[in-house]
Image (cartoon, rainbow, N blue to C red):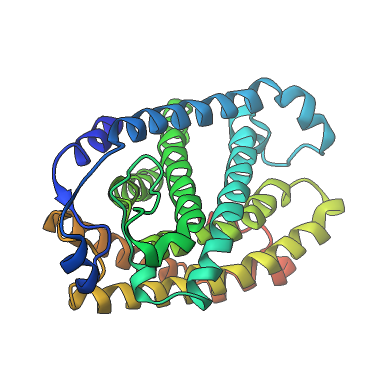
Length: 310
């Protein structure tokens, strides 16, 4: 159903390649292409993520021998353990794809680049007539690839959670929201800067996975858990709070002037994306990271804290 929605999002409508008024007047409206390729790419990525998860499950008896068992029985479960590794691998891939473009957007671009869009949905390649964006071709395509990988991973993870009894209401709401936002952003090849900001939050996830996996496996892992906790705390502040707030404020201000999103994007999609991004900032803030993370990782009396901050 979700992949079908991705297909439908992109089968109608014409739009400009940049939401900048100057570009609109010169480029006029261009036809969209590449939606068939995007649909099949999304299907392929989703199947690939599911296959990777079950590779970890099948090989669990081999790689699980490399670590001590957890004192919590459910943390020795094949599916729970495989999902932690699954999430760690995904986060590292997304971070590698999204961090370089994010820093380029931050330090070497103007708002016209940050809020560019493309009519070529398969890869979000720059339209050859937009000469000012030609130097950003590789950056835009890296973000589009990361966006496709991120959205399809979230969909695959929702399937995994549901099939193996790990889905909670929080997880379901979180994943549905991110899949919906991902469908709109990647399905319209727009808001590359905000997409980079959202995906760069995955920088903190490997540290969280490390803590979650090793915290109940004995004192020999204590230093690793504390070190990973410190890194999670720092990356949480920088990427999940600082940059997330900055990107959201910039988006709201530019969209208020009608500059952030292409005209062809339906109003309900524009509103939904902005609300989802604002909600994400609120959720991260409500995690109360300063108090809960400090308790978890810097006080021996609180090391059993088990609520995931993802």
